[in-house]
Length: 328
Image: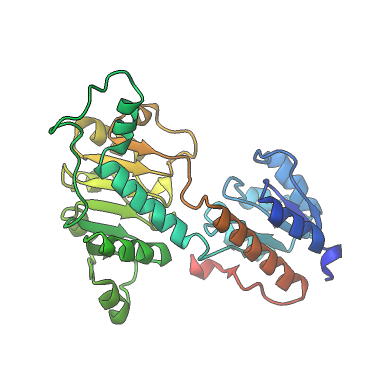
């Protein structure tokens, strides 16, 4: 199918350079305002387009896929995570799904380290104090945090991002531990100097900082539940840049309030942007608005991957980043 005759609908505003290139290559409909489409708007787009370019804010379930037209043949997701798309149902309906893996690895790993440093050194509290009228100047015992060097980091999910975090943590002098669905190959484990724990319970009880880097799947929902959070040391820190649903947010909030966990750095939340109000009030929690992959370079690279997937599909070939249910 020639590109210019391929109808493509983009659900959110993308970087201008990406939108312009899409317009040059395809018959594309762009979004005027940067707000998520309603369910009806998504259904209308899916009934008219050959290709839909959604983002994480578009929840494409079996019911919505049932409203898709016969034309829709590719959902070229702008982002690596596809837990917002019912991939199995899409495949049953003859609709391919592609994503943009690997692009966000370095940027997200940088954010993990940034949050670890911010929480361990109480930067959120320090900024609030410096911007208030209460700061009385330097004191030997004021705003004491903890150093990262010598601490044990536990990584939950040792994929691309987890491994990038491990390399950065080693440079900070941290010991690297990990739990993963599959153990890494010996040579990779040796290169990262990482200790594998088959038991997540055993790992979380021993580490000083926990970084969550696993995807959200039925098996990882509330993987860090109240019982498992209680296994962590009271002076431990937790960082999540992956998916909010992996942590029981209410349980985490209660434990942070009670001092049963020392601090948390969160870039994602269980209910999207609807953050627990009690969590917002805590001084020992640093909350960010899903900024982990938010770099100019990363967003443009994501767009380039989307374009390559669509162009390859238009040329009659398998998109290089095709997602199949067995991968999930």
